[in-house]
Length: 139
Image (tube, rainbow, N blue to C red; front, side, top):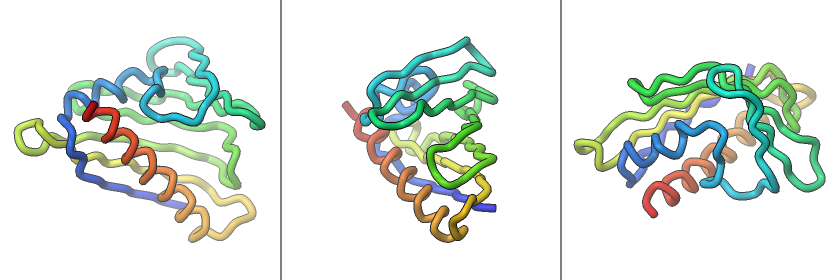
């Protein structure tokens, strides 16, 4: 099983970072998709990500806790060589809320690749996501 745990200090207020993440159906902060389709609302909702040349990617919200600034989601069918994908995100306040410690974790079963390759691939994706999240929260 691939297990990824990325932690990054973001030079952005925790309230701004959470504001971007709490709206699960909105990925304006992370470019690269053509269209986001939101199916349902609240726990169990799906954000369907459409990208050129790929089947849509469904991300299903499993939990959302505003008090702890955390949520989790699954991706039933990944466009990568992994399955049983589950991720969780949690934010911690640093410097009286002026900065953020972001935790992005996931687990996935490798399908035809080595665990180390799958881990490196997912770590790269999350590092990029957190960098873009920081930029968006600072603007």
